[in-house]
Image 1 (cartoon, rainbow, N blue to C red):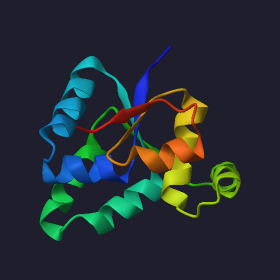
Image 2 (cartoon, rainbow, N blue to C red):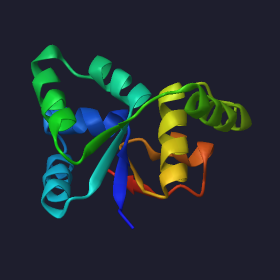
Image 3 (cartoon, rainbow, N blue to C red):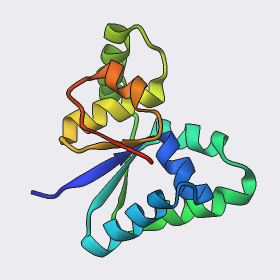
Length: 130
């Protein structure tokens, strides 16, 4: 079985700006070990807004890696994320898509803000940024 990580907007932003350094190390280790990095499209959109334009090139590098896959926000995945959000009383579609993607794939979600994901689905494994 192929393993991987699901990256939320804070993890994507951390990679782009290089802080914490852990995030860049995680990505390059994943490349070497052929570990898939799933990027939910809603989290990607949010990440673009979180980082200054000077860091956009780093996001493009991440998206171009052979082990990066985009988890598209389709009607089916929007429904899945929306149900999680409704049950938790939240409205952050990016967090909802991350939690739903991590649940569906059975992979840990990498985040700098674990509280929101834990509220959405306490069974999703969280890999918290230092």
